Length: 200
Image: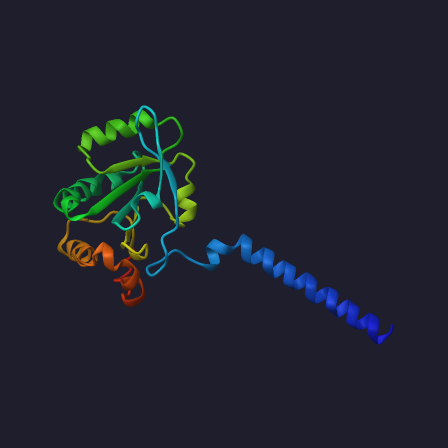
């Protein structure tokens, strides 16, 4: 085998390895970039429960402080925490907090979700993603799972399991994020650090 042939083989092996690395990086992109505190919140797509449903995405809440909650009607911890989410929203909606609760119930569960909303007298945005796409985008491990997203789109809190969202600690977090005005988002995104990550 000539030197030229040897170099050709080396070049082919390098090219194959580079291609495999590229494909692997694409396929495993979610695992390589975990969704955590300090991450940019991924987009999602979910439907309203109106008679004529409307698709909403994270872009619909751009510039807002958002509590994003992934839940299901069959989930007991979801039922436990919903009243605290409603209490937090009642106190903070006038200040600019948006609460977006995305149900990942199976297809055909629209009426069960509406009944749940009525039972708990929920007044924040309830969306429906029967495909479970949001679970992949946010790499959830179950439900409920929640994310507090600042105006600049950065996740400041990730919580696995139920929480008392109307607690003093959560209210302080929301107060701090709401204090960063919408006009300061671009500057604050560079200057501010995520608050914390709490997981259980």
